[in-house]
Length: 359
Image 1 (cartoon, rainbow, N blue to C red):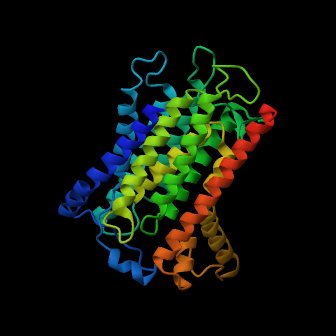
Image 2 (cartoon, rainbow, N blue to C red):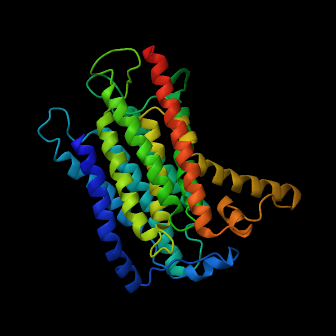
Image 3 (cartoon, one colour):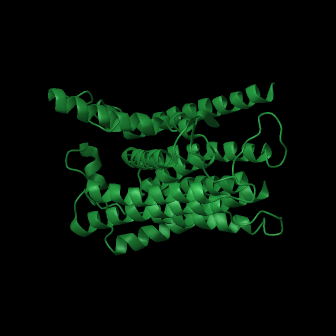
């Protein structure tokens, strides 16, 4: 438990202390955010706010994970694992794609960076590499980091897929959630606050799996997962990084995470779901991200079919802004929705354990 607290604390401290240094450095080099012209007028004042703050979040998460391992170094079998390294690969890989996108926005002074094809190719390379390695990385017991079964709160055995279909599904899942967090990152502190809550839920889920691991004791309700404690450390470090960044990102934001942060965080969420065998549960835990994405899909699809709009503006948070809600009101209410979604998701996870344990 001490190592989990260390991971969260280090992630928080590095993020909260390094972010103001990043703000000064990015301002000095002119790394300011470009604002879309068709957005709410209140956002035009945010033009020039330093962006690419996600670089600090990625750094804080990686260092939080590594420092936490110093407290496990004398415990047998508690070193850095393939699961932890693959999750960090997903975080850094998608963060790099986002960084390139942010850099092009700054370089060419426009609100669009990488084109859709280039971004999807980057997500394809990172996502497919993660999925393939996760299936190949077996431990001495023959347990892989991921399985080809579709999962909810644990693997659904009848829905086991061929390896190539699982890889394709994993890519769609990773790309979907990384883009979902990216779409949600439109108001000060919205994505960072919601992400912190989802990562907190995975701290609880993975630590519970660690305490009920079939490798330790084969009992009803135990979990066949790889390296659950290491997953907890990654989730805790990411949670701390989000909270530390939120100190500077909350309204009025002094820095934005940019695509560097949003793609990295969304990718890490999907990776945590895959390795903890809770893929469909993430749809519940991250329900707000799903709703925001669906608002864009519905808006685009309906407009192309009828030339009319369902929402005043998509993504969903901008609809409520144009409806007259203050920005802070939208943010806090969306945080509350995420909190309720996380509570409901954790309730489903615990209810499943009670059912399997016969309690």
